[in-house]
Each structure stands twice: as C-alpha cells, then as structure tokens.
Image (tube, rainbow, N blue to C red):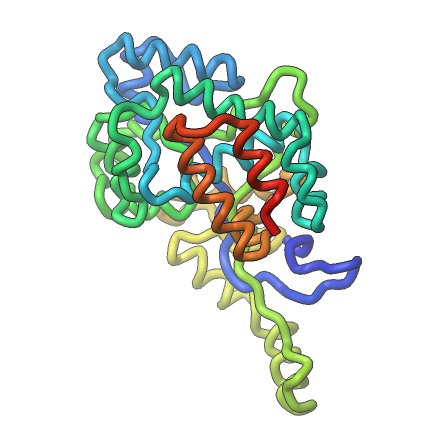
Length: 306
C-alpha cells in the first residue's frame, strides 16, 4: 500500500480509503453450460474457455467495455506482469520508454491479439460503455461468461442484480497465470487506494493539524468500521474479524486476503504515467483491441511517445 506513495525510498503519500484490485467475475450458469467449473487458471485455459463458451451458445465469452478504452488497460497490465514480472513496467514508469519495445512487452500485447482473433470479446464490444456498467450487465443478464473488472463494480451487482448474487451465480477469481512467465500469480493491478499528502506550502500549524489527523483519526476503529459498513475493504492489517458477518462478507474477505497476500500491487498505468503517454497508450490500446494495429506497432508508437 505504501509503495504507490513512495519516491526514492521516502513515503510522500498515505492511503486514505479502500483498496480496489482488478479481478475476474463469471456467470456460473454460462460457465457450467460450457463445461467450466470456474475462472480459468491459465492463459491457455482461457483461450480454451473462449471456444467452449462460444460452442455453448454464449455470444460474448468475455465482456469488455471497449468504447471506454480503459477497461482494456487491465488486460495488458496483467499480461505484462504475468509474462515479465512488475519490473518491466516499473522501468517504463521510471522513464525508460524504450522498454515498450522489450520482447516480453510485445509478447504480452500479442496475447491480446490472440484473444481478439479468437472472438473472446464477442461482436460489438467496441460500443460497450463501462461508465454505464454495461459490461457488468452482460454478466448478470446471462449474455457473457467472464468479465475482468475492478472490485469497484461489485457494488453494481449488489444494486442491480441482488437475486443473481443471492442465488450464488456470481463467481470470482484472480487473473490466470502464463506458462513460463516471470510474474508472481498473486501480483495485482488496479487501484491500491487513493492517497493524501501534506503540502510543503502549508503553514506550520496546518501541517501539524493534518499530520495529527493522519496519525490519529485516519483508519482508527470508527473510520475503518465506516468503510466496512459501506461494503469497502480498508487498507489496514488485522481487519479479518471486522469483515466477518457483514453484508457480502465472503467477497470482502476474499479481496482482503488477496491484497494482504500480494507481493506487488501495480497502480493503473494511465495513472502511473505522464498524461501524454497515458492518453497515447489508451488510444493505441483501443486500436490493438480492434485489430487495427499489431503488437509491434503499438510498442513502436509508445517507445517514441514522451
């Protein structure tokens, strides 16, 4: 949690709210219809699952809100991690943009092209909008088998599909491994948290008051319990007991353990990069998903974007 707010070994920002990793969701009815017992464990199994879901009549094997662009980012974040480990993107974020053309990055990007050519995202995914939760709706209305999305979208299932949840039809899990890949299978991407810093331009009294708040009020018992009561996972240790017995405790406890056990948690790339690079990345990623450019073309463009 502190890694995102750390620069040159010094902590400049503290997490102030809940953690939101990206996870896989699945419609168990559709998965079972395709002969699958849950979230695929490996990338090869995912490709097989796509074929099985299509054969079972599931028009959209994997829901993707392509029009919004940023949901596609989750795919390359995880694939790059699973193939190369977190060090590859860390080098890019530190300014070594030539690493966009690293063979491992091109390999990860090529896996997206594999999924696209396999029909993984169904027809018309480029018109699906995430901000309207249209990708989530494809899962609970039975039109899709799988969805890669942030923990934040669980609230949409709670609000829009309580019967679907109550019937135990939603399954969830981590991103698959890649055979021969260097990344730890427990590594996460998404939003570790949001962060606060104390401005050096603030007065001495203001700094003293804010630091006192950060030390004494943030994530005290009342603060933590308020987050849990709202169905959110706070970034504190020892919260297992507080999570048990609350609404949707199974999912919240799953997230809590997932984050607690993670060796690395990568902040979303569009937030970790300078804005010009981030926007170019999203634009080119959209073209990659639409099969308008190749992995090599994506990498070459990004290696020249400053």
